Length: 248
Image 1 (tube, rainbow, N blue to C red):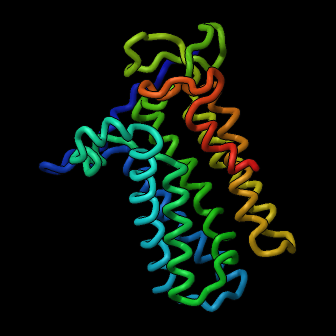
Image 2 (image 1 turned 180 degrees about the vertical axis):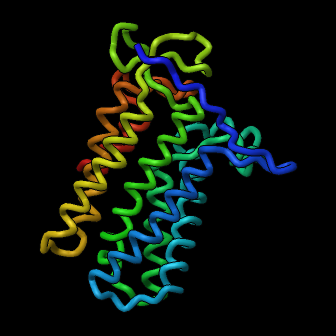
């Protein structure tokens, strides 16, 4: 069994503001996204300016935040937020959904492409590569926060660890790291490989959708289900149900 590296989730306090590792990982993801988009558009000789790239990244940031929060409210905790709607605005207390964020970024990217008259699938193929790396760093942020940890496992399991936020103090799967590797860095490597092939526009975009859905579906068996939902239909988590359409 591994020892959890007890890292302070707060990097530094700046007066009333606190810089947290989780938010910092998002910043890293967006910065890397900028450079990936810039490099790929240049490699493909796309007529997109520096200002257009800044605009695209801004659109995607808005899509991730609004979509991720809306998705969490609708998919994971609607009854609670209906009882206290002001909590919807308190993103600092957590509660973001990948599936909602994906829908948000797709809509934001579509609006950007319509406005700038860029081909959606061409830009989408580039955007999902950036998104995969962003996911990898985001899950590391979850790990540092000791949140979204895995289901209990045997103490003899080589990767098992006890998370400080776990009230039961049980050996658990570090499912955030599984997700970071498979849904983030490995998926980016696969998409990067595909991007060097002469494929039809949209293949990389839909490969991202299918690969994420598949990786997440199976990793969910090691991830602790959301307390307010538990296991649905005796077999599946909410995350798995939301991944099924992506796989199909």
